[in-house]
Length: 475
Image 1 (spheres, one colour):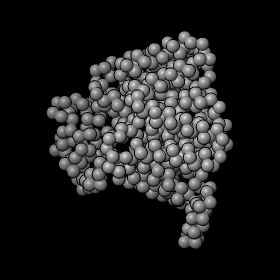
Image 2: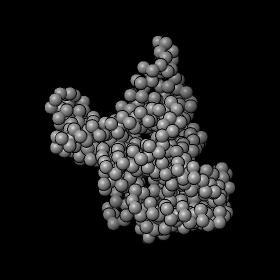
Image 3: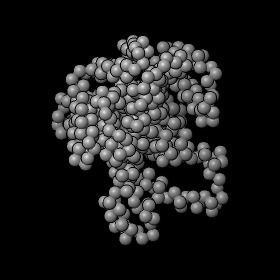
Image 4: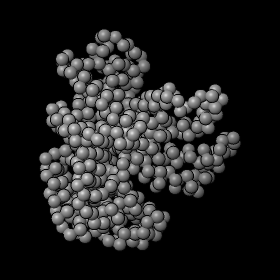
């Protein structure tokens, strides 16, 4: 069931009516039933596999000893590997269960938190099933922790018209982002990335810029929809984006992009690896090779590489995903290792890093670094990656013919100009809103209904039909 479809909106209306009609103590049961219906609509057979994950994790972690933790990891990671990576072993008939990458991380996070006594094991199987299977966060996150979500999901909620209005507004924003921005940009992006060797540098630069806008609009649009639905139910999901393209460095970007996934890796992979005995031994060995290096820096190297290798692999076993993870491992390590030197250099030349010019430079620099990474991520092969970078570097012409060539992926001439103007206005409006939010979170809220009406009209007129599936739903 697509999140942008008539059946889904009917489903939400029925859910809201029943949710607030039943006695408040039974609301969580309505959510559990609705989540089961939603998941079965995607494929009835796959509810078996999420049920296996839920049942085994709950049973084993009621007594969170080491052997039970190991079995939990083996079972859940085993299911993930079988379904997600089977195609790499020549098995092409298995379809990946909806949301398996996300609910697997949630089950693993719960198991690790129980083992390290960060949370008490859940006494109720039904409550735990609702935490893992809560339908708004099931397909693309956010990856909420048990401690964050449990009480919210089982607690009674009063009907609140303000929550209903604000939630509905976010749903409209999400549909607008997905269908108008991401959907329209996708036509251009897909055309260029299908054969980057055929296009000049200017076209490729436009394509990667559009892809970054498409990716953000797609993913944040999804978040707006699921956060809006949850807000209508009185539940607050963790925000996954905080204006990432205004970040001043790459580490800041990853603190503002896919926040829940990065928090999961930080809490369950990076920090345990940093403090582990094996990492201390490796850092001690490196200290003999680099005696002047700080111990903290050396202890960060291997955990950072591990996190980004797993992050790339989590997206899939494609060479481009692994290379993307390696790219960010190098960038993050360079940033971490040179931080103190850069600070001293700025103090030496008396450069104010917080002045307007410096901030603009830092934001643009970070955007370019992220764009380079997304070229690796989005490309289908090493040959495409090579062609993309080669043509951008060697073909830097900005002429009338280059501009005309950059318009070609839109279609015929008139359509190209019209599409470019529409996209330009939409992106400019989106940038103004994001910039205003950076300065004042309350900006634009006074005319919420006008904006909602305008977005509905624009979505109906210019929304891309047939583009309702979200990118990260595939993971």
